[in-house]
Image (tube, rainbow, N blue to C red; front, side, top):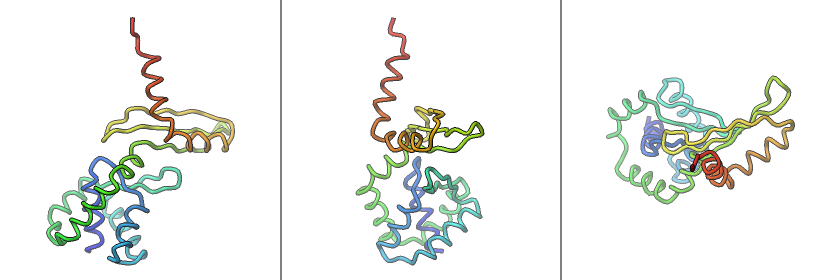
Length: 169
């Protein structure tokens, strides 16, 4: 139960963002709380009970706490030691930029019914979507390249679109 509570606490503290499987796993394994099997089992059970939700973006799973998860945490949060809570807060403080960037700017692609690839690029701030673009391209290489370049160029694209579409007259 402790591993599930740690995961819920982490997701609750990150609030408007998501955490990846790698981020959760890394935190728990680096501190020797448990093994990989127990982490994955805990994540599966939390999803099954609708305490967390999962979305997959470019083969990476992103987790977010649900309202039911927040309620469950309220009842059992006192079972997490203050030391573990502090370690989680310190981890987020140290990794805040990385965690925030991975959640705010993302891109993914799928093969569509027109035998092309639809690339979805988005910028989110907290729970609001600032920009959501879908582009159809003919090749998988082109789709992958757009996704790979999105993080570095998303701010410029956003500013360009706003400047071009804003009627200054």
